[in-house]
Length: 247
Image 1 (cartoon, rainbow, N blue to C red):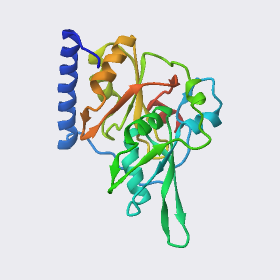
Image 2: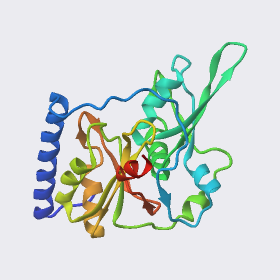
Image 3: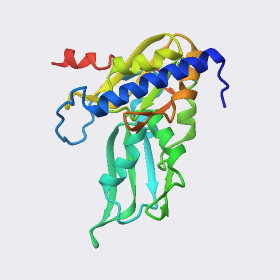
């Protein structure tokens, strides 16, 4: 556990107070709610990862296997449960044609490597609907793929489960309490024109990023629990600004 200095603790208190005020503003309706229509999941490019792996290997690393799913749970239920770790690009639940029910397992592919890692760590063994989930990796996954990513950018952090009404400015205002923020982006969806509920923050120092991860992972913002970790891949994204260029 990371021990905070009195100065860091004061910054944490400041950040959490701002987050509480932001949450109240969001839930009270003082910030406008964007109109979003339900659209199918599509694989659209929204960021660039500068890493030594090819695209196929990255795709494998972003996939997870979920087994021992209660038969009363639907594909939508599973998606809702696992989207807290990041944007889900696809979910494939195998169906039994004889019964019309699923076979008790599925595969999920995330947008981000970090989402898959967080999901496996957090959900394996968790009881849902009276059954303990078995969460792991597909057969074509190799630990060497993950190891080859290296250390990544030590000043870059990944943030998921961001409320749809929280924008980049809100997020930066909260996290700048831990140190100077060089860049704060939320990854956009080019169909819905809103963010995909996850993003990245680059701090000036590794110390600031370490403090932010230790302090804000599991913090509630806008009624949703933030998932925060160090980035495994050095990602370059223009964030919501890229929507204007796409128009």
